[in-house]
Length: 232
Image (tube, rainbow, N blue to C red; front, side, top):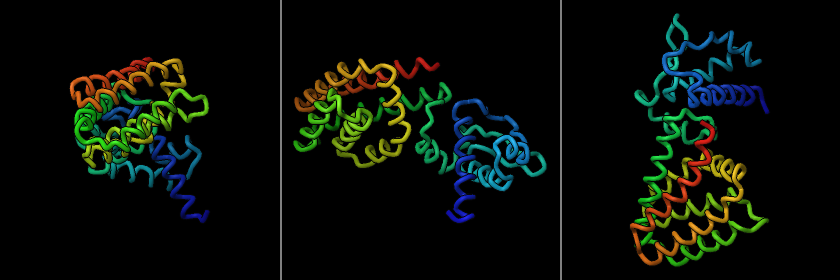
């Protein structure tokens, strides 16, 4: 790795670390951050890397760099930039501020329940069969559970027939995979019930029962939310 790429890598690591603290609420809106020199010493990196990281976070709408007044954490919910959502979607941190976690889960409940309704009329037989195979894989000891469950829900968004829905879901892949992994690492016994609910969801979709399909997918998601909420 040449020196330029190494520098970019370090600054990205610093930006990611600071972003995680902002998303968790540890660094709250209005807070003045330490000076670049102080942060560089605390993190064991160069001042230039810290400066570059702060510029990246400013572009994303998470901090404001004020000449002669230092760097202040912004309320990105009220003053987002076009890059704010992209940064949030690419973050794989599970340490989220409670209100941000609730907003993310509300969005997922809305998105997947709407996808379940649309899938009742738009799903292809090949997709339905693929999703049934994924349900069977869920209870296999050899399965990569996180991958199987993520792919099941991603296929549901594709089955909606709305390409933007599936693109939005795919954008949140890092954090969703981490959430799935955490859920079944903490409560592995949930997988039997999860697989049964997923199978029932597909039955509702095949029967074109929009109402029960939407309710069922929300039940599946809320099972995971219950486990994730224990962190609070």
